[in-house]
Structures are given as C-alpha cells and as structure tokens.
Length: 279
Length: 361
Image (cartoon, rainbow over the protein chains, first blue to last red):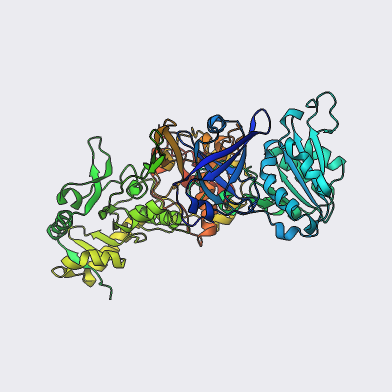
C-alpha cells in the first residue's frame, strides 16, 4: 500500500535488461534514492506504474519475488508507443516508478495444494512473481505445474528459466503453441491453452489454478477448469486493464464496482462471475 | 453555537463581498458572457459577484477544485542530474458564490472521490482553501431534475453558506451551513439583522414554487438495484442511440471525476498533465493491443449511467453520482437524455419515443 496518493513518481535507474523473445524484454530497475528503495516492498501480484518520461505511464506487474530487495523487475511486450519507447531504453537510463499498487496472490491459502500456473503469451509475466515465490518455498506446496503457451515457439517467454523451474523436483513444465505456431522439431504441445489444459486433465477439485492471458483465454480457461471439477474460487487470475492513476480515482480500470487497481488485480473466478461481462 | 443566519440588503451583501475581495480572497462567480451564456469566473469587483445571472452556467464550477488540465510535474533530464519539479500551487483562499444547489452538491460528490483514502493531495489542498456559497434557485429549467435524485432547488449539500434572494425586496438571506462558512461571515455579521420567521416563510414559499416548476419525474426508489440487473438489457442501445462519444456530458458534469494522465514534450524535458477524461471516449478503456472491453458506444454510455446510478450509490449509501443539473441533456448534440435513460431502464421499458424527446429540431 502506498503511503500517499501521489502521482509523482520516484526516479529509478535501469540496472539490467534481457530479451525474453524478439518483442518481450525484462528490465531490472532500482530506485535512485536509497531510502525510497529500502522502503519499497511488495507482494507477488502487485504492480507498479512505470514512467517513460515524455511518453507516459503504464501499469506493469512486478515480476521478481519480494525477497529480492533493492530492485524490481518488469517484463513487457513491445506493443504501443510507451512500451516501444521503454524497449529503446538501456542500462543506466532513467525511468519513473510509482507503487506498488493493488492486492496480491493469496499464497497463504495454497499451502499443501497442487498448483498449476497457466500463462498465455505476455500473461506469463504476471505469474512470474508468484511462481518464483512458490518455488522458493517448494516444500509448502503439492505438485507444481507450469503451462506456458504462446502463439508460436518463438513467442514463449522466460525460455531461459525453463530448466531452472524444473530443477530438483521444482515444477513440471508444459509448453504449448497455437496450431501453426510450432517449428520443426517442436516437442511440446500444440493447441490453444485451455484445450491443452483440459486434454491433459491438469486440474481437479482441490487444485489451485493460477491463470493469466488474453481475456478470451481466461473465459475458456474458466470453462475448462469447471469441466475438470475445479471450483471457480480456486481459479485465480489477475486482470490487466488500462490504468492511469493506480489509486482508484481516474476511472479507467473499473469493471462495474470493481476497480482493478484498488480491488484487484488478483481476483478469483468466483468473484469474477459477479462482475459485469466487460473484460 | 451555530448562528441561524442573517438578513442582508443587496448593499450589505455587495459590501461584504467587497471586504472579502479586498482581503485578498479570490471570488469566483457566474458572469454573463458576450454569447449570452454565463460561466464561473474570477471576478474583479463585488458588483460582478453580487448579482449572478439567473441562468445556469454552461459549465459547472468544478474546474476551481479539479482543473480541466493541470501540470503534475515537469521533468528535465538534459543536465547533469535528472529532476522532477512540481508547479507552485496558489495558496490563497477562494470563495465560490452563486452556485446552484446542484452544483454545490456536485462538488460534494467530487469530495467523495478525491478525499476518500488515499486522499488526492492537490484536490485536498484546493478544497481546504475554498468556501462555497450556494444560492437557492429562483427558476427551474426544462432539463432540471435535482428533485429526482435527492436534491432540491434550495438544497444545502456541499455549501458552507446558503444564500436565498427574496423576491420583491431583493434582500438576501445568508445562512451558515458549516463552521467554515460561519467563520468567514463572523467578522461582518455583527452588523447584520437576524433572519425572521417571516423571511423563512417567504423563502419556503419561493422554494416550493421552484420545486413545483420542475416537471421531470422522480426516479423509482429501487432504480439502482433495477439498473444493476439491467446490464444486458437491449434498451442500452436505444437510450444511447445517436451518441457520438464527444464527451461533453462528462466535461459539463459537476460530478464527473475521471481523468487522464498524459506527457508532453520529449524524453529530455517536458511535463506530465492530468486532464478531464470521459468514459464516452473509445480510448478510455482500449488496451495497447487494440482490445477494448467497451467496444461500442452503447456500452460506454451504459458505463456512464451505471456508474452514476448504480455502482456509486451501492458504495455511498444510495447517494447518486448525478445531481440533476441537466447540463448533459442540454449540451448533448445527439439528444441523449440521462434522466429519460434511467427512467426507461428502471421501468424495464425501452420507451424509444420518450427517450428521444430531447432531440432539438
């Protein structure tokens, strides 16, 4: 929770950058003022408003787990003007940070349960922090499965971390591409993520399913999990609406009475069913 | 102890405004422009503020608390060190006079938004140095519907001081509503006469006459829950028919609070602004990917109506995010009428003819 409702960002410096795909990039960012950096704490699922000065601000999920003190990471896909400008910035350059904002994934409620993370395209970015947090405390949970999907093999994000996730009984990894997106020698699944998920029977009545992807994928994932007997209360997603202030004033992210920045972004399928169909 | 109020002659009222102006308080009042419409403006003389034109101002006074566009900060990365600098805020007190009760109530709705936790610092700062004098209406317009949404032509919600102009004598009744209003009036009020029972009776008669001149129907008391269950109603397409998404409804609205944040300048130096925005615009919810949760105009109009008459009331004890000023009805180039829209939705009917009755020939 931010202490004040400020629209004034903290200045921050890019301290690292790596390309996840041809159009997806991860940046490591450190707040310039040391005391601000030290007091910046977050929980997996929270987001920050990232400023690219001259272009504006965008809501981006913080992708690293909170025990990595002193810096945050963001993963974004080059999509519009702001993310194109953000991609052109390099190590040493200045951005702005406000936040953290929003609620977080209820990791405390997942103890002992099997967890399946399902990320479609850049949606995987929002699952990175909770996945990392779960893997840090691997013993607290049951089976952990990560389903990473994208339209083509070259769009799969976090490929550089796949081995690490699977290491030492960490997580079972399932890679999937949309039909037509496979390349020669592709040994993963082919099909739309919800279809792959259902075909492999990846959830049951007690499983927690954590899903993030395009709105249409979410819709089909809720149907798939329902057919597999997973109650909607245990299907957890995080919404990615257009946002401006992050503080519950500006009105952009509202879905009925639900303000994604204030009441979300993390929400269960059960709560989602009570909102207007406006995602 | 709260004073009960004072009876002032026009001369005494003007004199008091002069004293306030001379003390350095910025006085903002409706001023008749050359085009025949009036607008809230900072005035230079007490005479200008003392007798506001009876017609409603084209735009609400909200910009004096929530500017149409304001610089949040400037950035300069051209030198050795990167700097962000916030603009100097005005510090002096401001007095808003001549607000119709609906406009004062509209500012109270903005308070609900910007002063709830976490408080918006610039709004809060402006609010603290503002005193609001509402003025009871002496006439009702065709589009007025304050009484349909819990207001009244003599309402005091949102006012620090309430003014009533007595027909005939032209004298004024000034009544404190808040401690801040009483405090402002205190130094001058020693020489003013108290309000009499006869004054009150006249004020009540005047209020009654204006109230009965409002022809628009009250909303059914269960309008918010009916609307809440009408999200998928086909009537939305009809009540929003013709909406071109120009956003004038939101700009003119005394309670609309949505804003955009944009940068101007370049990467080396420039500024970030906050400006009024409208849910009527297609870009309001459009993602960078092109996906738009509210892909068509009826769904955007539905958001406007639902926010004001269902979502907001559900979180604010039934209070609506609309004060019935009627500006959006008068200014809409397509004849979209929010009062008729809510009535149509709340009655479960589509009422095509009635919903379009506001179209000008």
